[in-house]
Image: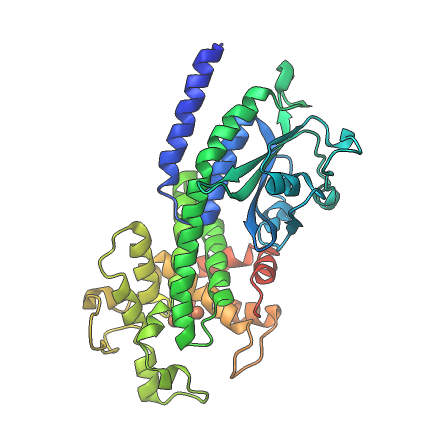
Length: 412
Ligand SMILES: [Fe+2]
Ligand SMILES: [Fe+2]
């Protein structure tokens, strides 16, 4: 049995450990996931949500729920544009508005004169029963609320393990300490996302088909495909999380090399001549050159993806020895060699499918959007030739997640 003093020093050590591990994470999702897991562990909460302040409201940005674990509903929530107003119509909205922590023992016994109400929408949609909540603001160094963390249903309090009870005051203290430091990590994640989107916007200015929503969908599909594939392979949870985090960001950069292709070719409305196609294909070289001296594992993966996302599983596609390098800085020729099958980096094999699926199901100047069924039929038919069969299987296992991603990042 741990003494209270031992328990608290152990807890503080855990929190400090968390901060150093947050520095390794790149994508905002991975940062939120880590913070929420730790807050739930500290407070023994059955479920939890992180809302990010976005525009004029609070966006549902991360959801975890033990009782509904694995339920499509909960995972898809993350991709839905669910948003709450910043006011007393919900507990989280009130916390964002006032910057105060709110602890509630039973949400169904909130007095009618309280300045906030319990928003029943999630419980109604999921069949979950919220009882106790601990809702805290995540405040940055400038004093602004950047996020709200809501922990739901304290388990095992009062010695009755597994039963839902109120959150003890100590839990609120620990989680508040964690929330204090979480703000910096969340802002770093937001900044990475902004930087990536800025690079993407730069490419988008040049190539109108390479839009923000397109790259966000490709990033999300790629991360989900990787997770399904890694789970099927039995890859350990730590590697899975780190790689998923990396691919979510690196996949978004698959076509930044288009900044090196002349406007006359990128914006040409009609079909390209064979010479123009040859120059267009060089975007793989330009992209790989951008990440030529990998400073991090993220850069190394972004280079692999930029170089090989048009490589086909059967060894065709490009680049290859036949594709002549452009002028200016280029990656090593060996890095651009034609590859076959599993020799193509896994991240590039995944992005190849995600990019094609998204291009097919989107409207382009030269073609209408294909239906989901048509695109899936094409992918199934190209398994083993264009695409890695293992990646195809992982993609088909995603089910409704694919639609949820499309709804989260719609074309304007
Ligand atoms: Fe491309
Ligand atoms: Fe693309």
